[in-house]
Length: 287
Image 1 (tube, helix red, strand yellow):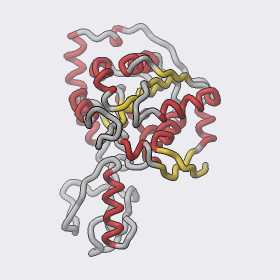
Image 2 (cartoon, one colour; image 1 turned 120 degrees about the vertical axis):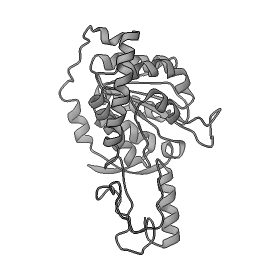
Image 3 (cartoon, helix red, strand yellow; image 1 turned 90 degrees about the vertical axis):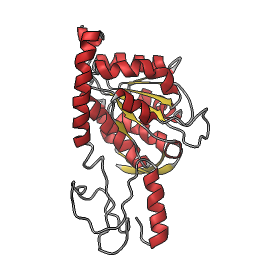
Image 4 (cartoon, one colour; image 1 turned 180 degrees about the vertical axis):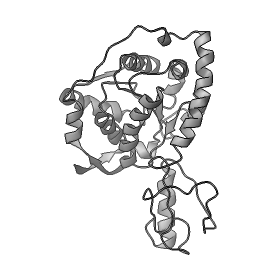
């Protein structure tokens, strides 16, 4: 395994390869476009299918069809594209998936190249689907792999929400190319089984709706511990909030834990890096 300098989008692409992705679809739009472009360059070496679809809805439907057959699939778009893909996504939450299905919706706070600043997390809340939000390229790779595992564990699509500064920012990323090769050395077993569960009707919708609420309780427990919840806790008392980071080196404090700090900052996504940078500048200690 070696360290490589990658864009966040390239790291997401490599995460998909390390997860053994079989089908890649997407519709181009900044800041997401480099994900499919990178995977297109790798497709012939690893033997997976890639397409630019006619729109985001079609892209998600192709990925969903592949998932029904047990294939691992990823679909990419920018945040306004999720408006187009919302119809199949909302129903997929009820139908479920077989092979892991990851929806990458790249948000554009600012905005830098978009009509609006809509937040993908609002759609996720409405659909009752889990969202993972990486803070740097290394996390982008790791959380992409985790997203496939979660999708298959809970049998629902999982949303990955990078933002512009993550997508187009660069960072040092560990890429295990040997493991990537091994993922494709044995073909994944894929077959479509005729089953009424793949066709959504009101009776099934009612049952699945309650199941989604129950599943969201499981999500809360699952995401309340590493590797999804990282903490930056000072190693020595009195160093100030965030100094002397021990991020990810131990479990997060449990409910009711008695901490000796006056200030805590809750972050998600790339904002975590901004906070760490400010704390490092203020304290002189790398956060």
